Image 1 (cartoon, rainbow, N blue to C red):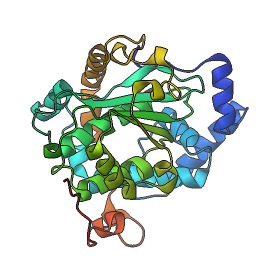
Image 2 (image 1 turned 180 degrees about the horizontal axis):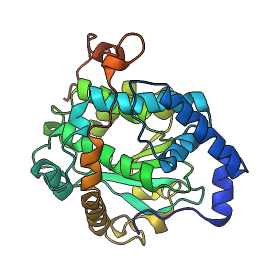
Image 3 (image 1 turned 90 degrees about the vertical axis):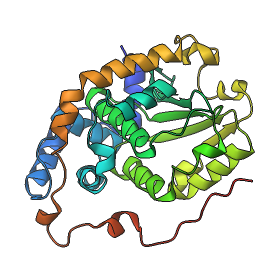
Amino acid sequence: MTLVQPSGDMCVQIRQELREPDSPDEIERDIGLIREWLDKQPHLPKDMDDGRLRTFLRGCKFSLEKVKRKLDMYYTMRNAVPEFFNDRDIDRPDLKEIMDNCHIPPLPGLTPNGRRVTILRALDKDIPTPNAAEAMKLVMMIGDIRLLEESVGVAGDVFIFDAVAASPKHIPKFTPQILKKFFICVQEAYPAKIKEIHVINVSPLVDSLVNFVKPFLKEKIRNRIFLHSNIDELYKYVPKSMLPSEYGGDAGPIRDINEQWRQKLRSYTPWFKEQENSKANESLRPGAPKTADDLFGMDGTFRKLTID
């Protein structure tokens, strides 16, 4: 199993943290209210199943207004950033190359406080930089699978970025424009609760990269970034036992976990294809359609990352 679900006391703890109603009837009522709202939005699809709506509700701590904003952005981004959401076939050469040369898997277990941990790392600093949009597409694909499969709900996300293979020559493809699109997608269109971001194998280059990315993040997330000079510091936040063997843990080789995710992504290929038409229709949006400037402010200027 690639996504262990919380149970027992952990499940109770998570429900309290997410302000989940005690009565299932209350949750069904909220789902009904969201469906009524969706039915009145001519520009939005009506295909969101109850399971994903529950995940949106949990991710928004059962704030109906926040769920509405997230759902609108979820469908809007699919129309606005097709490079992230079209051609989502894990066996396409671009995506296969990324899976072969990078590891990006959510780990099977959960932290003691019910958080999901994801590791992201490249394998070789001498391998050419992959297509940035395709790499971000892969992250969104995993996010959509989690929307479907997080049936109970988790208390948030912990991301571990292993910068061991970071190289100055990898930087140019990750432009400010594409980074801004990516982080708006993650922060505004998905019900993710980013609790911690850990960066290991740091260097002066990595410090510069982190400072470059910070302006694209919400302040509360910027304050949750931790840089570690050695792996023992990470263990204070993430139990050693749940990490892959490469990091001293008991979860097995990260390559095996990554391959399990490759198989899962492959199994969803027909669903990803069906979802390509599930996006906002700006010509039907009440009022003015949303433009790239509305969403991303692309008419502004971006500072460049300078690497000494």
